[in-house]
Length: 99
Figure 1 (tube, rainbow, N blue to C red):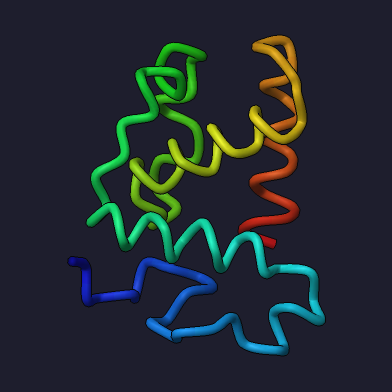
Figure 2 (cartoon, rainbow, N blue to C red):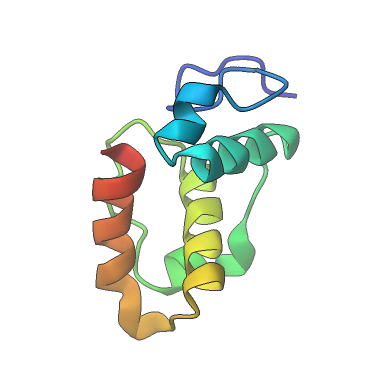
């Protein structure tokens, strides 16, 4: 299991989401990062991230590619959007996740 959380913005190894993140509306980001750690960073997203032309999106921002795949998967799942909404994902990622 991953033990270095330095590339993570929200999850730092806690058993429960910190109240400050819940108050800020960031608990889902904490949960997604926690799940990514549980997956040992091994999330391929079934090729959907790269298949939608996101291979070079924010590639030097320090966030692991496999975590971006997971965030993309969850965004597309919960939003119900299709590939035409890639610009919306990019905006959400930059504004809401990295914010």
